[in-house]
Image (cartoon, rainbow, N blue to C red; front, side, top):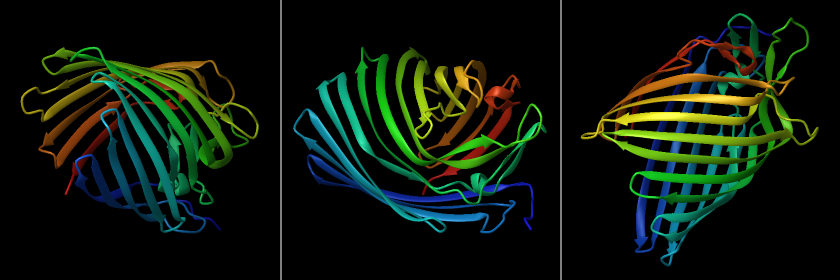
Length: 321
């Protein structure tokens, strides 16, 4: 018999350590480790609602002449329930001049299911429930991206990126049978998925600590087994962002942004669209301490097709050792 409880708290603790060594005038090695513990009360058929994982990584930055920077790296992850995985990556930057550069990166990534994806039981406004799945497997990603960056002057910069990825056992959601207009959902693994897209970004410094930026992302994500679009993904995403950073000590910052989605696939149709306004306030004390508070979906919109069910308050603190 499955015991069903509602998650009331999810607690996560992270400890990180990192150091860099300049081994030569044109070479720097960075190595580090991180340890993460996550736990929460949950419904479980078997297993634990506590997860422990650690990672070790090494990155080398080698400057091959004045034009080329090579960055090979390797990361080792270990999860107490899912075992170990090694992810290599190779990055390269070619400097055209002081204001323009090409970047390329090819590699792999690994992500274990989170505690809520495994054991969660979340009600969305009482309309439907999203259930965890204790049988989830980690997702593995392999892909590449190509970028071009350019600064027109000290105030304006642009970046355009093309990316293509393939995933095995991608973690997603499916609607469960039965129910009314709003069906319950459950996390599942999708055997093989792919995503391809283009992202464009432009930033402009307005002075007095203000920065205005715009971002556009076009995405084609699909299930490789069926050839169909992945659910809960937007073909077009637009972001307009205004950020203010206190000019002298840079301890305070406020960011407000509006995000629009069009051609959003909700599992049945592609014609969904909508937008939300969001903001966050940060306070820093040097490089070690930070607190923040923010609101997503400030105007409390309810757009079921985009899984918006009211505003979300966020507060947090960060301490680095």
